[in-house]
Amino acid sequence: MSRPSFDPVSFLERAVRTPSHDSVDEMRELVVETLDRHGIESEVVAGGCVLAAKRSPAPDAGPHLVANTHLDTVTPHVPFERGASREDERLSPESDGADSEDVIRGRGACDAKGPLAALLSGFLAADPERGRLTLALTPDEETLSLGAAALTGRSPGTEDRLDGDLFLVGEPTGLDACTAAKGRFQGTVELSGVAAHAAEFAGANAVAAAEGALAAVRTFDADADEHPQLGPPKLTPTVIEGGGATNQVPAECEITVDRRSVPPETAAEFRSSLAAAVQVRVPDDVGVDVALTDRESPFFEAFSTDPDHELVETVASAARAAADSAELPADRGGSARPFGAATEASYFAPAPTVVFGPGDLADDRGAVAHAEREYVRVRELTAAAETVERSIAALLGTADATRR
Image 1 (tube, rainbow, N blue to C red):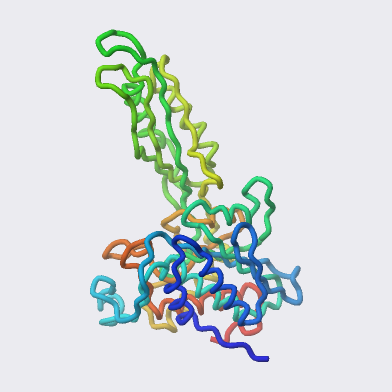
Image 2: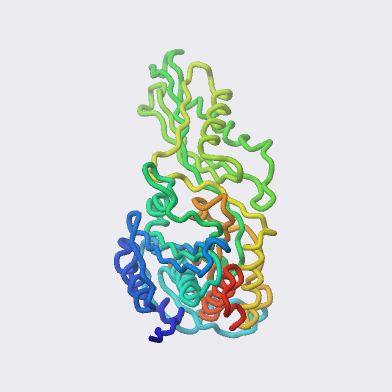
């Protein structure tokens, strides 16, 4: 029995109309229904993840490729629209060769329902001759990533249900093959002194000790090596609180810090290194405690994939071919570069991982993903779908590798 064809553009129109900022239930149902209509069995596991798989006749003769993205979006929901691009959403005629562009607007258009549509298109079209293909969709990437953590065995009492060899992660990359991303940790520096009357030369001033603690933060990366893809790490103090009365030597002060890490730094290594650096810079009578912010899932640590890896070149070359057939600007898509935000790709490392998809985190007019003006270009979506199909075909030996 013949199966219905899959149109990524029509799917995205439905997906953007489906709110998934408070709950992904409707979005999950849409995906499961779509897979079922195309004859693909799926299962819901690990707190709401959707898994579907295709096995070749020779599953051990090739890699296990996992295509992953997320079902949830940030708040608030932005309604669906489709039409010619607005002035502030257009590339200039000099850069795209067109005066207008057919776009899909709304929450999730590029983050990450557009990438989801492209991955679904590639998955449904695939007919692997070797290896295995898994579609893994997670429910809460924009919050705590509990689903991905459980799916990959990163949460206590869970096992890695994916065991992938290669990962293709859907996010808005402008059709580039993104090979690395900084990690993101959050922690607090707690300074504890001794309260006293401000008129007396007594006590231990925790707020005054913040001067030394902030100096330690400012110079923390003075000798850090730059990562070849991601550049230097970054440590930023974001919130400071301390003191309770204007006439009292304060006994407590707390500084919140945001860490953007590069390999090979782990969250635990960062915490211990920062604690040692702060301890040196504050008075001996002030206590120092550096702690990572409590969360139910692991922080996103930095990841990087060798830009020369077969996965990177496969996706990049497929993107260049697809962009050319879609008549996109010559510089649009197909580059290998770092990704600008932390993602669940972190949980898949150290397996080779590429982040890829249509749309942008931001353009020359400002924020796109997570913004009120979120959009994706229709011809870029179709190019992304073609890229995924070509990449899967090349990596898993699909007989129809050159059909486009």
